[in-house]
Image (tube, rainbow, N blue to C red; front, side, top):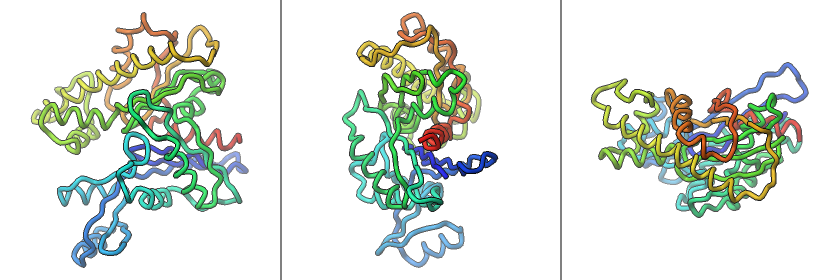
Length: 336
């Protein structure tokens, strides 16, 4: 067996396969990266039992993890907490590590062999915020290996190339639009050249849109996840058009921010990679799941194509934007 583990700000995703069985299918599991602590009185516990919501009681508190944490938070008009923020372990979240243990246990089976390989994703160094990737990487390695696995970190965006670009000789520009950040990597025949992350992504869209229209980030996220047509924000509930228009504004801003960041970082890159005349740009991540995102992205890119330093043959969506990082990590783990 081998495992790929995508550690995202919004979701944790695992991909597993029995390497001894050529006909075995890849099994994908995911859990929302969220938790909620509430007072452990008998009425709350009864409500959770009646709703079949899993929980962990610790002292005077009950901890709910995953998707149910959001549902209960909305019911109680509270904000669910996240153990990760902007792609790494939240520095101010004291319960982060023990919640991550619970979340990971829900998507990782017990190792089938001693020191079974787990490749897990880590973000590239951020170019716009001070971010401690070293601590983040070490804590996840400790947690994963405490389950009996052998853990190896891998660049998140590079994993997209592994799962999507075999026909391209594993050579591409890849960007993963997650909740906490956008990770970008330039990969040539599996070798990572330029790699960086930016702190703007899905959460930034939610927070910025909420501030612009006087709403909440939770409400904006709910509207966004229900579906916003980036080419026609008037589509949908007329009462939410201001929110949808704000979401489109910040999606456009995010795309140009990523394009401009690639321009700057490519000029500074010293990897000396000799690229083919043209390479594909593969897009992935939950934030890229918005309706017509690819067409919207292509239209914005065309405005800057002439000044873009890398010749792009095509811009295409990953086969499965939500699980292809985990699947790419699985491929790397299987070939270790």
